[in-house]
Image (cartoon, rainbow, N blue to C red; front, side):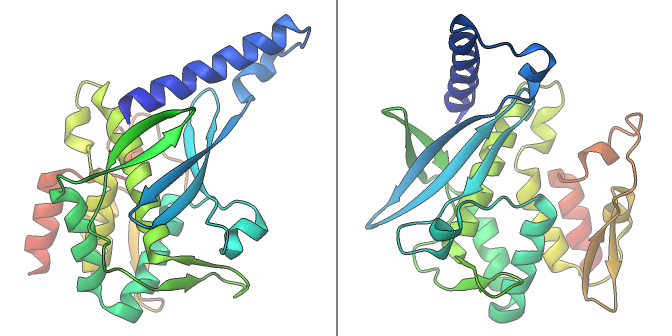
Length: 243
């Protein structure tokens, strides 16, 4: 994944320069320019399509689906970390919390990798155990659904990209795999927790789920600015409190 992020960012810059050579003017809009490409993940007899969008700051993954999917018909779907948590919560209500958490834990322990193809090159990323995972989630308007496998692969791509970015920072190792740890904590808890509350996650008893406090996060509060990540110690402390 490390090489992929570097490569696709380089390709974005190359495309901008190519447009400039043809007389296009960017000015301040250069940072907002989105480089859009498609990647395909092959998993045994299945395949999954994702779109990648790259601007000056972010590399984002969008779900495209396969040829039989309603996602393919509708276009593309982007999910925030909070929206991913909500979908995992929905799965947990149908399949049980342990079902969802076991798959997330399988990612943390995994030594298995899948490959995706981009620009005639293949790139590896760590994957959870989704061999026997079936089912789908209907989205809010019931006209669109995504499979459990699509969601877990999306989480893996996002986490692997995040791990690469944290690997470049001084204390980044603490927060690697932090998104998956956060999902585990949010799913295992059914009441307020001081560690989660400190980074903006408050439990809503009437809705039986965590709500993310969307108020402005001060840049001076470094820990709160990493509200989508938990360290190993934080997750361990949360699960000990729970037990």
